[in-house]
Amino acid sequence: MFKSSKVLTVYASHRSKIMRIFCKKMAEMQENQIPAGDVTKDEYLALFNQIVAAKQNSLNEMIKNLQAQVMADFEARTATLRSELGIINVFPAPPDSIVNKSIPYTDYTNKLIARVGHAFMTREVIHEVCNQITTHCAKTLTAEASEKAKKDFDLICNYSKRKKDNIPNTGTMYGKELCLYLMSKTFKKSAVDAYESYFAISDLVTSQTLANKDVFNVGSIGGGPGSDLVGSVAFIYDTLPLNKRASLKCQLTVFDIMDTNWKEAAIKPLNWGLYKYVRMDYDKQTDDRVHFEHIDFNKPETVDVEKLSKLDFITVCWALNEATFNEEFWTKVFQAASKAYILIVEGKEDKTDLLKTIADKLGRKVRYDRYENPRKLIILPQ
Ligand SMILES: C[S@@+](CC[C@H](N)C(=O)[O-])C[C@H]1O[C@@H](n2cnc3c(N)ncnc32)[C@H](O)[C@@H]1O
Image (cartoon, rainbow, N blue to C red; front, side):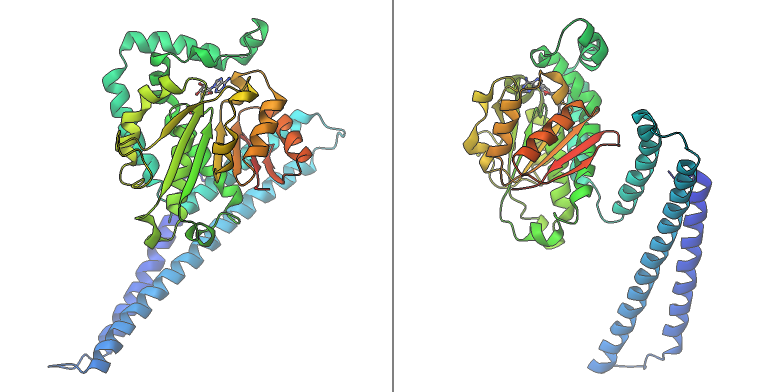
């Protein structure tokens, strides 16, 4: 992570560099006498070419400077990591010692990547939807309901208590109030987690590959209010070439055990937040931008093979630990969704390890950030 004084130094040096380039270009422009009276077409074009060249130079300089600054910071941090690793001389080392070193380092590098991405990836879709979610929850969730929901959510998140009290399945706890509570607390985080997990495949899911697609079929399993689904839409939107964004076409589906409650809690703010971005392929009767379908991790028969087979992107975020692991269910999901990138985000690696084993058995290639928090397992299309 940048130290704040370092950030200031970087900005200050950028500013002075821009000013130097700007002043130089202004001086060049002034030296170049613009004729009095009417200008010929050639003179007219020459003037504009000069302006374009000046701006292009400034932009190039800025990008070079950004690269130099960011890579210098990255190399300094990496050198520190290497020297810290050098002093560990007790091997075999306990597995925790890997995570203790890797998590702060990958946190830093992930933030650096996100920071550079902010230059052109605005996360506009996430901001728009989150504004709607915040306003909606503030209007609909009372203080008493919030208090009660908090207790249920604390239990869901307390893995050791659930293990001790033998509560492996918590899906049916999502009553309407808990749905609103979770939306108010975690929507943005899940959307951003999903969005940033795409950075691991930004070499495969590029502006060019997306530009060639007409409709994006996107799903989220255990998707709750559509938070990680919105992260996927935001990534696609930000990655698409500018001229393709206005005609973004998406088919969006949340699959969840509590699909009815989640729909009731989230559909209005989703519709309002997404209407500018998901203009096509929505339900014209209800105006709904997101479909909600039932699925249960414990029941392989609830996997809709036909629907999953059409999906291009699937996210499964913060949901695996809410149910007993069912190998048959996940095998069926991976087999059905053979065309899809499947992004799994989870706090612990026990279930993501099991999913990786299933993917390996099916011959699916994966990318796995096992030593990061959250863990990110990405299964590539078959
Ligand atoms: C912590 S929430 C995460 C929601 C969303 N993915 C996010 O990150 O904001 C867990 C989700 O898993 C769903 N869930 C829990 N058990 C499930 C099951 N057996 N089958 C399908 N979904 C389940 C819940 O209804 C809830 O939507």
